[in-house]
Length: 91
Image (tube, rainbow, N blue to C red):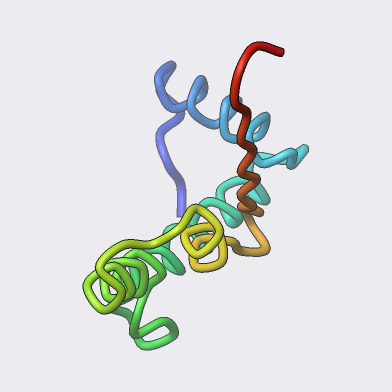
């Protein structure tokens, strides 16, 4: 399969290589595709995607914490973690 390498696509591919930390266009594209499939779901390999799972959790719980969101969205392709800090007064 050949994909036309327009100027816009070349910029996207370079940005994707930077964002994924992958040195080759093909591995960056693979990483992005895997992440999309895990998020979107509705495929044979991933029937329920993380976005649907997160929405269902929000409906069930009424609200979700940043930590719960991070747990659902964290993948091998893009690690997600939440940190919460509080402060009162002047520091």
